[in-house]
Image 1: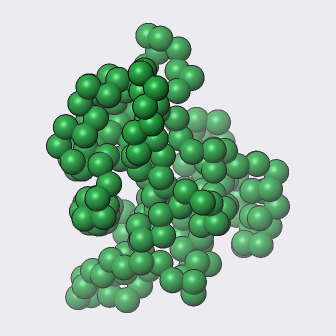
Image 2: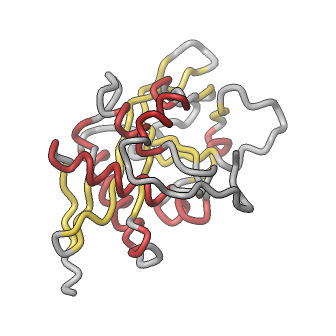
Length: 207
């Protein structure tokens, strides 16, 4: 294998392959089964979807990973709306994980987002992975996660400024776009179009 990596925009003909990759990547990770392949199917038609940042990674011509972004905002405590991005899902094919491909894809995507003039990316994620790409805790910029009780663990809420100081002094609240709130019944119906897989209840799942 030559390990030739290409990162490009997703095309219409990629959609089913990407949905299958995402389904496999998230299957039984956060819940029995997965919803993320339906989520990307829905987000592609959302008005906040950023088509220029809907990216596919190829490794030696094979679809190896994907990432997509949505427009979002921080509502400041003085009534401003600060435009930002959110990201996800991001995934890598199961048999290609733990090879650094996710980091390569993430860093390339952030570079593209920066070149398009976006100021910051706010996500839910693990600092162990995302910290290596410059993400910090949201609380370090006094940005709160919408609906999270005061004093609750907010270590999942991360941000990365693409423009240095973009969120400095912009204390406020962030919540993910409504497009991420999908109907689970619709997701289960959508999943019927894919090969049957066993849903397992495993330690560490969130649901």
